[in-house]
Amino acid sequence: AQKITQTQPGMFVQEKEAVTLDCTYDTSDPSYGLFWYKQPSSGEMIFLIYQGSYDQQNATEGRYSLNFQKARKSANLVISASQLGDSAMYFCAMREGLDSSYKLIFGSGTRLLVRP
Amino acid sequence: DSGVTQTPKHLITATGQRVTLRCSPRSGDLSVYWYQQSLDQGLQFLIQYYNGEERAKGNILERFSAQQFPDLHSELNLSSLELGDSALYFCASSVEVAGGHTDTQYFGPGTRLTVL
Image (cartoon, rainbow over all chains, first blue to last red):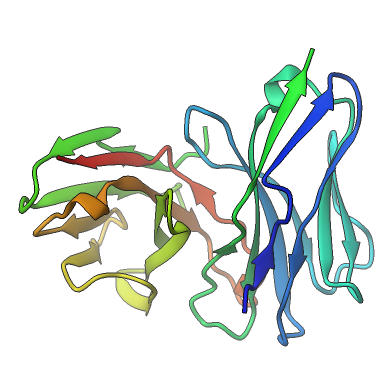
């Protein structure tokens, strides 16, 4: 079964609007971390935001916030006030606590295009 | 700039050849991960080293090997290259403290390998 599911292959958003990128996950481990990364066309992977499974509050980092709904196993990324530079691929990833390698498991990504 | 460096940035080679990709982790990070990003497989974990020791293997082919040196830099060796090995290879590093699922992995810029 897919551990991380991103159901939106591509999305458009108008500049200055907010956008939500969906991510659902599957794990039986009570300890896990959820991450979002941005990959611009230049190729590098840029860390955006982290949410721990025991965190009570939703994570925020500047214009990025994570809408964490544990019971639904969803960890959606919200980007507020979109900018042209936000056009990129966005990957949701998970690390499970019992997996001693702590490797990241990635979703298939969502390509976001910000329209001027 | 994540602080993780990878060389070379681009590599073009022929089938059957052998190449070495190099990674220097962020200062203070003990753990190095290698990932492969291809169009058909997405982002896949290959192998992890922690403080010089192999910790975990993922979907790494037998033709591929890696090591981490005493100065903590790591090399990924790819041999008997095939067309399907063409991909973007990322190195990531993290500190790895207890409860490592909370640690953020920071990615290098990647090495784009093209096998002709």
